[in-house]
Amino acid sequence: MRRIFTILFLFYSIISIGQVSAPKYSNEFLSIGVGARSLALSNSVVSNVNDGTSAYWNPAGLLNIKDKYEVSLMHSEYFAGIANYDFIGFAMPVDSVSHMSFSMIRFGIDDIPDTRFLYDANGAINYDNIRFFSAADYAFVFSYARKVNILGGMNLGANFKVVHRNVGDFANAWGFGLDAGAQKTLGKWEFGLMLRDITGTFNAWSHNSDLVEDVYALTGNVIPVSSLEVTLPRAILGVTRTFSFGEKIGLLTSADLEMTFDGKRNVALKTDFVSVAPMFGLELDYSKIAFLRLGAGKFQQVKDFNNSTITSWQPNFGLGVKVKALRIDYAMTDFSDNAESLYSHVFSLAVGLNDKKQK
Image (cartoon, rainbow, N blue to C red; front, side, top):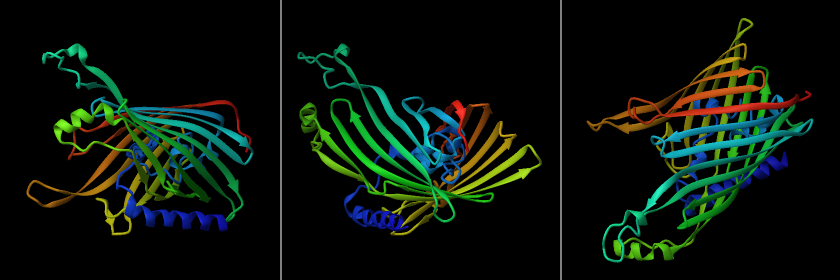
């Protein structure tokens, strides 16, 4: 119990310091989410995640994996295929009360044209001089989860993550951070807590200013210098309730509250100290084989053309099928009346290997 209070105290201390020194948005590629099931449920999975994507959502959920080994894959595209977002994870047991996993996330834009040398020495355009580079963000996550005899028994988990970001040869950054999570089951109720970036995630940027110094000087831009960027902590509380309708029909209902502490954001509840974003999900299943999922999230206040304020929200939709140790999930996200052309198709695959875990 003393350790829990120590973590919470450290979490609060980083928030207090970070509000002065950290940018409002940092490492935002780690806020997108992984897994088609989770995205279809509008990310309301902190209390019920039970597969390899637990490494991202709540490492305590690794203990809910049914297969001895699990490989998880996800691919999605954004902005009409310009940006690619991928996830791969591998989970396995350590012993009868603990689990571990390794996962990697990549969000990148490839084949960006570098037109600095478009004009040759004679001032003529030479398209053969165009070069290409990639701007990509990577996260390598090492996760560990363990059953503990606290409050009648619960699951605890932690992440150690290494972040690497690069923009061609122009700039790159290395960083690291820690997450902590917990899950507790009471009958048909499931509760979850995720403390993301509990120590702050630090990114040290290094810029190769020599490559852009001439261009920046001509355009009047500030020449970048090396810097340190901090991602502030956030907390997510979740609750899940399951219902049964006969022997084959089941319904999972979930709700999460994501709390940020970097000032007011455009979310449902905002104060100077904390902003709270609610997320909701429904998952209907038939014999745990076929799944239909709906979600609602990203509630925001948006000004209309007549300067009136309306509340917008993002609906999500998904399907899933599970055949023995193989699960395939699909989600459609980012579709609404306010942004009807901005939607993404997300596909994910999970494969269980070898013998079942002994419970």
